[in-house]
Length: 112
Image 1 (tube, rainbow, N blue to C red):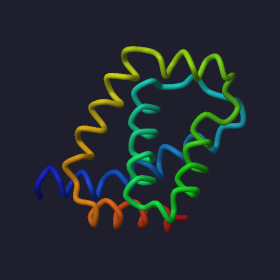
Image 2 (cartoon, helix red, strand yellow):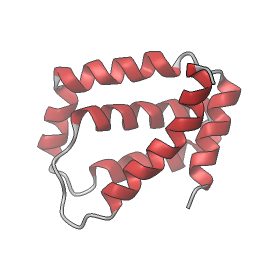
Image 3 (tube, one colour):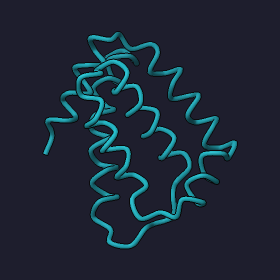
Image 4 (cartoon, rainbow, N blue to C red):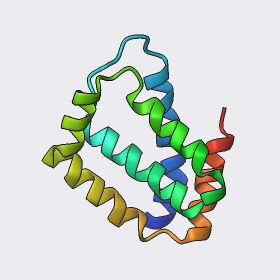
């Protein structure tokens, strides 16, 4: 399986597991800079390639920071580690065709 195909097939599972883990905790957990960058980058990619479902991806992104103080989120997003991983995620996602991206993103939305 090529890197591109494994990335497409794998990111839906990563999205689902990350959101599930975040949603199952009642108290806000410390934000993982790398995880947040990858998730927000991937959800932004999904909103871009699948604009008709963009509001759904936006809602998923909000779940990632739910309960976190705004200042904490702002500090994380300004960090070099977050920015570097967001850039890396964006570069990796640029290699995925729109059709493959739409299919993977919609499959993620359909997962329960």
